Image (cartoon, rainbow, N blue to C red; front, side, top):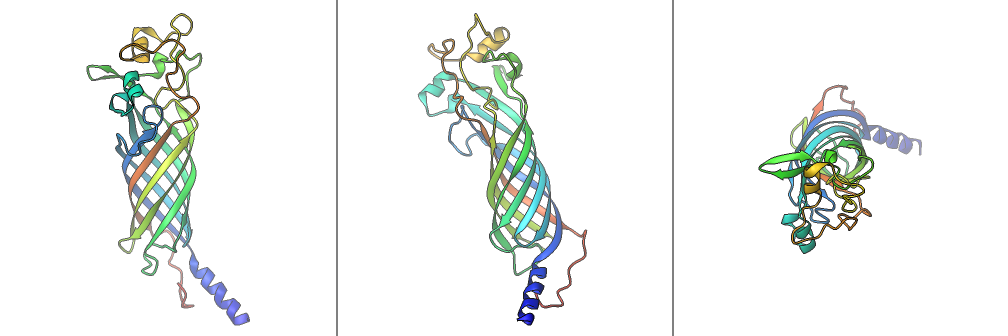
Length: 264
């Protein structure tokens, strides 16, 4: 029993180590909300990022990173008649800083030929900022928040908190290099990434700012956009998603553990 206990402890120590990595993310980003209620990857835009990962054992890892990308929505490209009639559009830059925890379904470690790949899940928290822009024609895009297109009494905040989560796969390709493929939705707590949430403003009570604000607030075709009628769906919040490839490099910040026990 003592011998067996000693062997189990040695094996456990072999599964624990400290590995530091830096990496880059290259892929795309898209948005889900009032202008795109449910089509994943629709109107995807280029995205990128950098990250640092700390791995204390074969099953878990912790990651911090910065991502940037663009999202957009356009009613005119919808298959829904009511959306095409509403005729709103936007685009926005998304910048986020995230902290994530990862769980590997299989034991995984860069530079270990016995544990070369694994599927994984991740979740965490991030802080992001955005600024919806509307097409004013002639190739000109203007900030919609300042135009107060829904006649809000208070401007919405451009810095928000989100909950990122997702899944992916990791693969060793060299002694110090790994690649990955991942998909990560962000659950937000704002409905204004697209500048669309509630109702059309009443020009007599809560008008948009200026003639341009009025024009971009109500772009409906063939009539519509009556004051206080529904412009968006306030019961749901907006989402954005990052997806793509990761390339990470192992850093030699800690000495390699000794495997004199025969366990790895």
